[in-house]
Length: 181
Image (cartoon, rainbow, N blue to C red; front, side, top):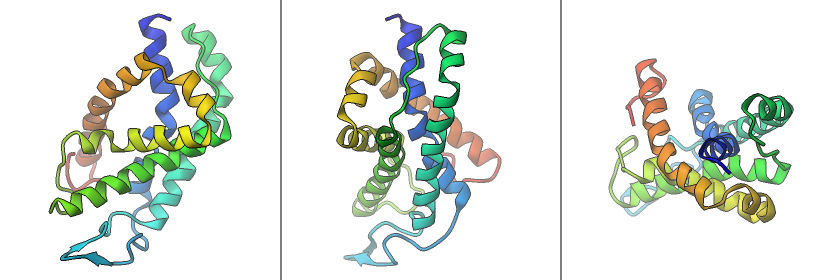
């Protein structure tokens, strides 16, 4: 498998996990998952993690997987790369797992004394990838095993932080995020 094929496969397969957090931001507001509870002197998660955002983000990620499946044959032909088809459990695992990874990172941020929106390098860029791959693995191990080899995972570890910084910068510039990270 060539380098282009590995990069396309990795990014294609991860698109259902790349979209949920952005969709959650656009959905905005709603009831916080932590219900306003604190642990010690800090919020458990904060107002930025809501039930609505989690639901909308998960649905958006699954919708992306379904859309990718609808164009996979023509994309494979166009790019001369066999892009993976998504099983429904894998799509759901990638989307909800991305949201859970971000929620877990929020919990760690609060425990470390960081406020909402404060940067936490590396965790901010890869939390959703870890959550997505972990939950997709639990729900459809065979799909993950056949899609993400070491090379694809390596691409994700390099490309995701770059894409994260770029997309968050754009979101900040257009006014949908309060901070550029």
